[in-house]
Length: 426
Image 1 (tube, rainbow, N blue to C red):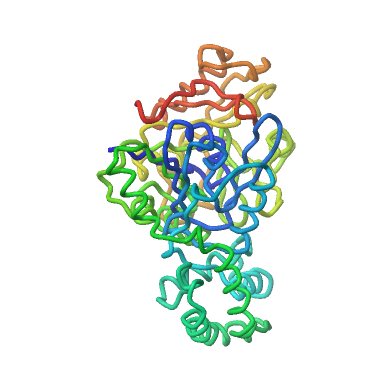
Image 2 (cartoon, rainbow, N blue to C red):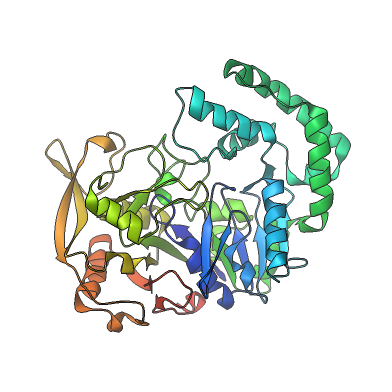
């Protein structure tokens, strides 16, 4: 068993990019297994920021190869742009990066429909308007275009014609105009030519790595509470963002996974619509937003901020089978005099330890108040270096959710990390 899964344990934006970047030197292969360009994984190395939407965060480590699996949906133009940006930074991708031929393709009309739904219909749920939902709709309806199709112009045009006809009534009803099959074919054939050397049987590469007993790191996108089956439906993403989705998305069996690590901020954030029990719509919420630079790396939208929701985190531990939690942005809570954590919900007088099936918007958080700290955490490299109040904060998280805290991020840069250890040696 040589695979480790890194998964978001909240509503996304937990800092998965940084943790994967930290773990990547211990792995031979990093695999992105779900989501699309709606994800934005931010890396800060020696003060320099890099945002990746599709390419795995491990790409910055030259000895680590990267795969984008069949469970993802790919915007080829974004993928190519990221390759070009990495090349400009001196990061080689040729021979180190592969995208699955089975991964479905985000098309121009997917983005058009996504945007129209968000602005002109009653279906708005706060998506990134990147076409992710419509692309997954095509996948489930068995009419999608896949990356392998970009390498055959005739097959691509035939599939596009059928696909566009299915979407035409929807677009017209929303007041939009679809592009022609010829127009999209020409654009995507060119993208296929540019990406030909990067398209292949990604699942076979992952399985071969596991058979050779190499270390494989599986990188999730979004978060548990956005999972299509386990999240706050319908305000969710269109894929399985939980650890179990790694198997289908990467093309491996569950017996190959040895460890699941959940990433959680020291507080909670959410982007877009949907219930958020611990949301702070006051000065404290704005302080967290400013101190944590809580603005979407994909959309630039300000994130909704609130106290740490241990009910949601407890749910994430259960549905992912988490072995440990990596806590990020602990430093953002510095100088907050009193810190609250939500240990349970109250719904019509009933105490709930896990999120309810529905009516999450009606719950009242039950808080416990903990002492804050004023000390700078940036030089802390182990849990023992942290102030006593910060250590107690992490201990209470462990006690409430029944899962140990491993890595702790105390700043945005790669080096600002406490208790970093090899995840494959757990």
